[in-house]
Image (cartoon, rainbow, N blue to C red):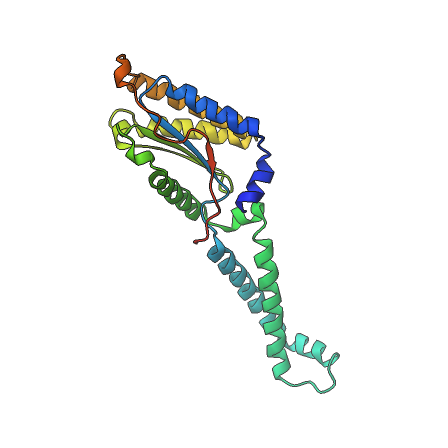
Length: 238
């Protein structure tokens, strides 16, 4: 799934993007922490898994055809006058090639693709992509190390909430995982914008409890991260 396909699927209006940005700004008013939100169509291309699955299925088909070689050869004899033994090998190659191509196309259909790709591979890909964006977007380098990333990978239907070291020293990862699980549940109901806003509010409240704004106006933090939802470009690596 590409970025453009994702944007068409979620059908976000400019107002929806504005509402999420507003939720981030409101949450950050109560805390020294910074919240970044991101969405990606998928965390990896998974092409290798799709190719491997197609080849494996074709291999199974080839193994099933081997015992039927005599019958297939006899059938080929009805189609060609000057039948040669090597025609059978060519027939197997053509059939397996066509099946592999068709299966590759089939395995790229999202709901089938989710079944073909191992859950462990998807889980690892989402974690790696979230950590990459955590670094690339600068969430890790805020002045007080109080950045939090809310990351959603749409294809895998997984959520990661990544907190910087300044936050992790005070707030258990279990609390972030709980918010991520609740967000995943909301996403499963098709409420993408509401899921983001709810998670942003909960993250903001948790940050406000542990990192409240400084009472001295001169010490108030500056807005270091982009507040809006970032929709990432599709990944090209496996």
